[in-house]
Image 1 (cartoon, rainbow, N blue to C red):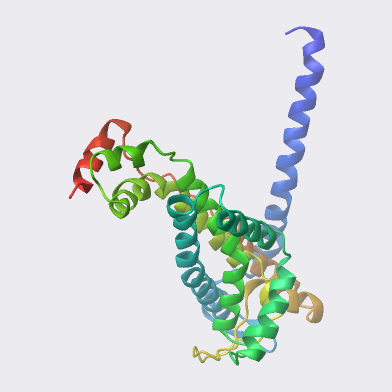
Image 2 (cartoon, rainbow, N blue to C red; image 1 turned 90 degrees about the vertical axis):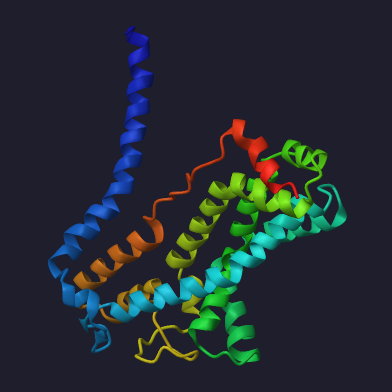
Length: 283
């Protein structure tokens, strides 16, 4: 290696090492501070004494319920919007431009604003109260732009050749969508769902405004729960003496919300087998 090539390569490796260290430092810090209090009781018991003792069982359950409600509400709407934009609405039309512009605006709205929106409309105006349903619907509005954009990009990346081939064989548009476009776009659609799941599980600023701060045993519609980031925020502000328990809770939040791997590489139909898919879809 020539001498003048050593400095750029060393600088590149230095930057890579700095980025890797910045990503590993929070994980190492969480492990060091949270590992001493890790136990089976911490996972299976509910918080007691305002979180100073007990575990995080209700926090785990409530986070899963809120995330499930948000996905159940957002995925069908996002999928329908993506299909509408890619299959039925002209790409350069007014309706498509309005929908895409609205999605871009929603994607740039801070999560705090979504929390205030849910507090005003869902909790008070619609009478849902501070519940899992209200929190889940608020998070659904927050992840809707991400889901829709990802699914639309998946269908749009397929191009028009498969649609033209299916039309030439006399296959209906719905059959092409179900048997050709959807299997081909499934990896990217799955990736979008996982991204939405990650954001809904990890971004709790919207849930903070829903006052989801009280773990409870009742799992009804008015179940007042405690989302993971809300659990950590409340403990950090008011319960300074339980630092180690907060570190362990932060580790669970990091693993559930931000450490989720995006396993979206599903089995794709081989290009040579596309004609078999079209033949199967032909009535």
